[in-house]
Amino acid sequence: MSDFQRYSRQVILREVGVNGQALLADSAVLIVGLGGLGAVAAQYLAAAGVGQLLVADRDRVETSNLQRQILYRQGDVGQLKTEAARAQLQALNPQIRIDHYDGQSWREAVALADVVLDCTDNFPARFAINAACVRARRPLVSGAAIRFEGQLAVFDLRRGGPCYRCLYPDQGDTAETCEEAGILGPVVGTVGALQALAALKLMLGLDAQAGRLQTWDALRMQWRSHKMAADPECPVCGEPHV
Image (cartoon, rainbow, N blue to C red; front, side, top):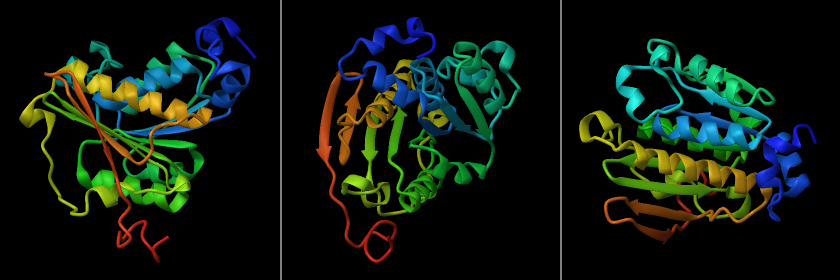
């Protein structure tokens, strides 16, 4: 394995080891959305040595992003997030490959990924990502954060259980945004880091708590875990849709 020193602190973990690190190097993760969630998740996955990151976003870096999207720097303002992210991630770990997608082109990357991270902030995008993951039979790690609240869920139809559409049956066109409701940077950063953790666990064959919705009250530092059930009538994953 090249550059053992870089990954030595995780290779010594019994759950990772040399074989696990080789698995990560041979894996690909698609991150859709490079905002507060994706900006943090991408850094941890790059640092861990995931061999290929596929990153997708259509937005440009704005000054208001810098409070929580800590992948970017002042000099990145005005650049496409995918291009700024690629430069920063490549500087962090030049050993990995980073491919970027804009607009709706991320759909073609789903089948290339071993794990997909939904780091978007609106329901239409989340439903579209979920549908693509169901079709390609790819595990999906979904995160969300607003104000002082966060949530995390892993959907993996290979092991049974629900998809994202089972959890949210009504396809609302609107959702609260950070611009409207506010967000504290470490709140969204914590959820993004946990998305990276879940992705690493999936690639290493560890229990990623698929089929459970984890909700977090950051003001009270309280986590709750909720069992999710599959909807047999789900228009995405229910029979005969799959």
